[in-house]
Length: 234
Image (cartoon, rainbow, N blue to C red; front, side, top):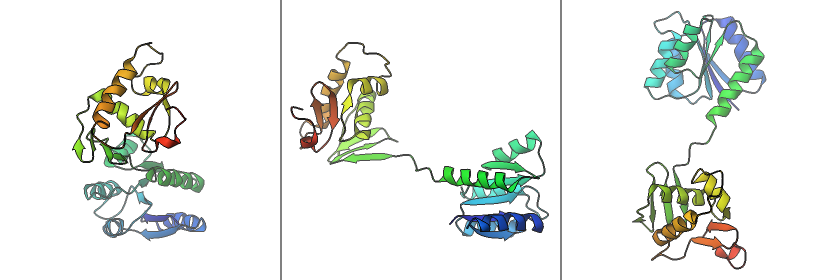
């Protein structure tokens, strides 16, 4: 069940929106002034805040929006406004709104925009860290360690290890590595991959058990702690 907060001083418009959303099964709260709106927006969790651009009290829509963002509240906000000029839309977006819909509007469009904002907010956060056995890499700091021992990787070696880690327990081909790690769209017919794999294996596997980097003859490579699942002869 989605939860929406409507901050709108026009009772008829607020009621129209709230009734339509409730018919879709959503939970909706409505308030008509900025002070209460800020309190509700900060104090509870909402999927989207529907915010009127023009409010009669000391806080207009953009001031409310700026206040929420300054407090670290990143709930998606859809601004409703009778001000349709491009400059006004730009002001709203710069203030931190996620979408801007001008009045009058069709409820079907409002509903579609709200669903899009909810989907966007549900996108998983970027992966920061990946682990396999006792090997760990941090994609933010571009660092890696094994059993707590830092690995001194060159930039290309880190890209290679990160790609292997992203495809852990899978076989990656030379073509996949050339395209994703070296940005080649052709095979340069060199041993560049073999050289880097050898260097990476010396840093990742030497002195540690079990070995994680495996060659799959005639196919490519695999980063796995379950070599028994690879093709025979790898």
